[in-house]
Amino acid sequence: MLHKIVSVTPGKLLLREELDAYDPAAEPWQKQFARRYVHHSEMKGILNNIEDVNETVYDKFAVSVTPYMAQLMDRDDPHCPIRLQYLPTFHEEAKPGFATLLDELGEEGDTIPGTSVVHRYPRRVLFLVSNTCATLCRFCTRKRMVSRPSGSVHKDEIERSIDYIAGNKDIDDVLLSGGDPLTFDDDRLDYILGQIRSRAPHVRFLRIGSRMVVQLPTRVTPELCAVLEKHRVQMINIHINHPKEITPLLRERVKMIQKAGVMMGLQTVCLRGVNDNVEVMRELFMQAIEMGVRPYYVYSTDMVEGAHHFIVPHARMLALYEGLRGWISGPAVPTFIVDGLGGLGKLPIIPSYVREEVRPDGNGTTIKCRNYKGMEVEMPGLGVEFRVPSQSN
Ligand SMILES: *Cc1c(COP(=O)(O)O)cnc(C)c1O
Ligand code: SF4
Image (cartoon, rainbow, N blue to C red):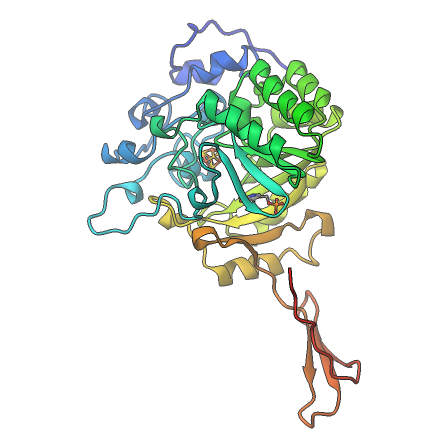
């Protein structure tokens, strides 16, 4: 890999020529973290056609872009899929009378009081350890806490969360998320993972959700991988929405994580104008399996404030799924998910390919099938009427 020599002042914002010459792998991640652009006016120093958004945007959600991510942005095109994800637009400006939902998924209702543990499903919990990310996505579902001082996760809260997990023998799966758990330094992460492993031996599956791997790949170091391996973190789900986010540096660091024995999954948010396109999705998911990262979920954009313009109708999501299933490798096809309003939880959007119907004469059944190409076939059914037993539990 080519290492360019750059003389840039530590912590200083990079201007256009400096950014062009900047090698994101040439300085420790903490230093690059300190160089993030935090206002759209700062981005004017590096990109053209920056939208002059109203300052009210910042009351709701901060702006933050790593130099590495800024390098991936198209210099001129405001519709660049990376720019759309990270730069604020007029869509986010205050609209009088517009309904706002800051906790659309009702996570606060399922949060164990005094902790940052969301215990919604049986046997598994979401542990929100961090309240910040390296680069802030305009469609973030957790705007209520990410980058907001009022939503900061205190040390005491982390301790009480670990106590809850340790004291609840039913929990066998812990998912660390945030914000981004990798915004912590290695020691803090080592501590939290170590506490869970030593005090909660009933936890069988320990996983992390992180977008920092994608936004600031140099966060992944041999030291971090040693921590992951030491505590047997079994899975890391990274978040990528467009093939442009996959770079040689990302591939290199993903491999480093995989060598630590961690299974890797991909989460994607279905975003209008970014990836609501069969060709883009096919390419993204094929590139993911090429690097050994298994597409896991495609989420619909949640109805959080300032993200409405990204929402893709569910019917269109069904069509996108149908454009993948059968057309590309099976392991490259993720499950499409709508997160139900107010705590309903994850709802899979699954098209129906097989349907068994009672014959019009009431005599037996017919199975109606449709394959991925739309070919339709009818097959004789089982010939007996059967009922789905009522589910309890
Ligand atoms: C998504 C989520 C999980 C994990 O769900 P899986 O389908 O097992 O990946 C756990 N808890 C909450 C609250 C979640 O939103
Ligand atoms: S990485 Fe996730 S939690 Fe962080 S800003 Fe983006 S959507 Fe929000």
